[in-house]
Length: 262
Image 1 (cartoon, rainbow, N blue to C red):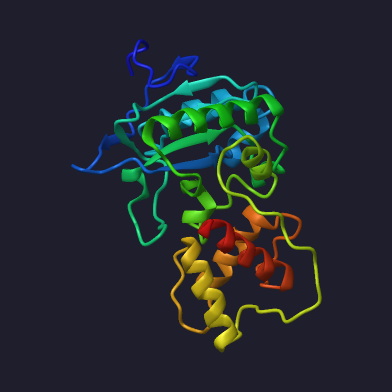
Image 2 (cartoon, rainbow, N blue to C red):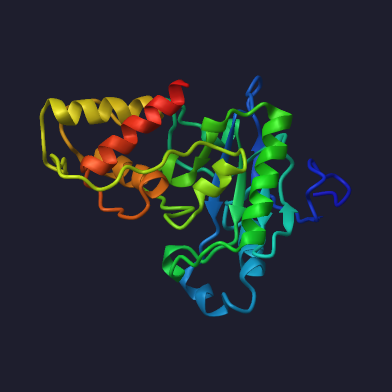
């Protein structure tokens, strides 16, 4: 990528990733997808000495077939890898609101973090401030709605867990980025879990699908439903991620649907 070509004034530097292609004709950028970089197991030993460097090398390696538009270092430095006009290979298989080709309509931001394999360390304040600024800049230029700022785990809950339950979605929301609702306190009530069937499960699936998760409304609490509940909890009820739709999860889901209608 040409060092002089930067889509945002927030970019500190550029690196070239070959892992991208053309966006389909007429494709509109309407989403931002947030990832953590994570690390391959063989790279974990080097994490403390060169976290961003290992991630950058992987995202620019043609053999990885993975990239993103922006990489946010732990100190808040932003590196651009792929021009926004190009279709970066960051989302992989998944869906949101019935769309299965998220790469074609999104901007991908990788946030340097060791991920679950590395203990899911907290995100530094400087890094989160940079993510907030970048999301605001992209959203303004592409008219992206707050509800279209998504986690990788939102669109691929059966495969991905990033950016994880330590990611501060509330801080983003307080700064004017994305959607967040206060999680409902734990309360006694019916719990739905994998293997359950009936109208209560059907109602849960309908609500998850209305939010955007790729869940079929079958009335059976199957694996896709479990994964969607897990992704929802990672984003909106982070204190306990257990795949069980308890009263707290269900009330938080209802609060989110109300917020989305506002």
